Amino acid sequence: MPKETRRKFIRDAGLSAGALALGPLFRANRASANGWMGKVFQVDETRGVLSDGGFGGLDDLFSLMGRHGLHFYQTNSSGPISGPDGIIGRQDVVLLKVNSQWDDRGMTNCDMVRGLVQRIVEHPDGFDGEIVFVDNVQFKAVSDCFGWQTHTNSESRSLNYRDIIEDFSSQGYKISGYDWRTSNWRSGGLDVVTDPDDHFTDTYYHDPDNLSEHYPRFTTEHGTRVNFRHGIWTGSEYDNSRLKLINLPMLKDHQYKTMITACLKNYMGVIAPSYGDPWKIEYHDNFQYKVGKMVGGTRFPDLNILDATWVITKDGPEGYATNAVEVGTLIAGVDPVAVDYHAGKHVLFPLSSNNRHHPDNSNNLHTCLTSALTDLRSAGYEVMPSLEDSSYTLLTNQTLDVGMWRLY
Picture 1: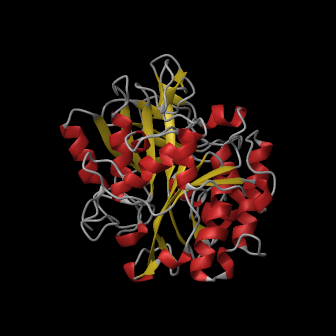
Picture 2 (picture 1 turned 30 degrees about the vertical axis):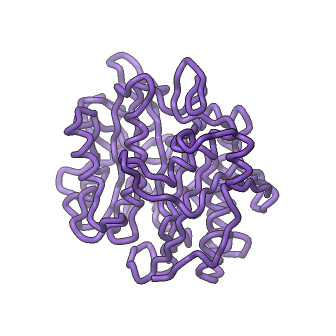
Picture 3 (picture 1 turned 60 degrees about the horizontal axis):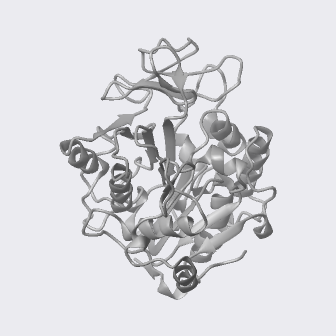
């Protein structure tokens, strides 16, 4: 796996410190066509909260991607962080799929997420789109999964997603959160139905022909009608080009089924929970076999950003700080299989020494990744061809140093 040091990256790119503050990303469908599958980007020793509201590690990650021609902003003109092949257009509806089921160190880093929102609204053409925090926290008995009042995964230990939503909303941006929990778990939650979308009722759709897995259809606080699979309803048709999905999991141990929480496991917060569902799908019992169909049959992410600023090494998916290691790493890629394979093998396993985190072993993680790889490739997605280091390329800003990690 070829690596690229931060010093060499800066020298070869000819970037100033200011230019390093931002950088490009990519759209999954375009990246697939241009050979970006199997690329994993990693930034270590992440810088934290910046004075302009950004997150230094995220900016460095964008810059690393920019070095390789991947653009964050979708614009007609080309620049270091923008171009026609960019991911975020000025009028896009951007879904941020966070981990919000658990508090403490078990949720996606709130400072990093705030930095992402900051960069989205700084679109060079002026952001006139919408941002929606989304998750399905299933059985978790919390009134607002975006507004945890206990300790959060942030420098202040109190910043939550609701704070971010309210802050940017007060600045005039269209930003909100949507809790996808079903009526089984939340009063007024979504029912799972087989009816066609009436473009009004918020529901989960179950496809009786099994052409897709369950997915949500909902209206945002700002009146935008979203079909997770087909895009934005314009009143006469779906516009799939303006709906973007950024998958934002955090890396942690998971004691059940997948053995780790990362990009693929984050889709358990997309589909409808299936305890006792009438169609006998039983997602929870068969997740390691179904996850590829969940991703490929609903909506493939435009980008995965895996938060490993803090990593939960045991007793997951809960996020107790006593089980957290401060790693200071962000990992990204279009290919969720490659990101998960790399993160389990080369980030989580060296910390935990737990064989269930090593994807080359005969375990549920290996089963999950193999199943996802097979199903996604069958669906036409160019994910890594096999589960081995030689099947993906790691691009990083520096050499990993286990000695920098601190256990709390």
